[in-house]
Length: 252
Image (cartoon, rainbow, N blue to C red; front, side, top):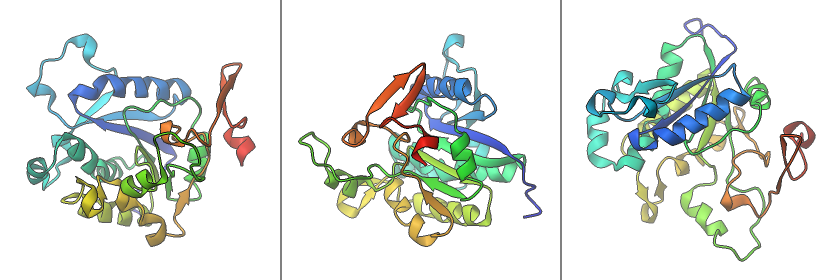
């Protein structure tokens, strides 16, 4: 669109309330160390003027308070959601805000605050040149061990881990984000009996609704967590991390 001149800058952000600022700071530090050219913003679902923080508790990163992005239905969302649901529900609203207010930004990447980045995100930025959206599945192979996590857990909580989603500026992205905003305004609940687990089940539809615009990236180095250790082995050599003995370039 002519309204949004294309640039190559990437913005990464997280969302948290005051109680999770320490985790958000750790994420930002890891991101900055590995990817100094990527801008990092903490989306704060709180008001700094309503709390007293010691100076050493304030992260040295940009913080964008929730009232600054002007969500029309925010008061109603506060009434129906708990803190976990609310922090999750505002995710597409922040993405929408960045695209509308930062024409210098080409890519917007979301990370949960409890994530650590161990390597360059250049392969991800390269993927965003080909696909407007990138998501990662919780698992890529059957679970055949006797530990606690089962495939039924992912049927309950969603196929994709929305602790991460990457987008680039495109009409498909704008359309998806608007659809996602609409769904999360009232249906970002933890209500497994009615098929809802915050924002995650909604993204099950995205590769179906936008088949040519979404990369389901199965690289095992993305979103490593306890639920996929049955298929992923992490090792390190000379300060470089490998998953199943490979880097992204080897895996491709």
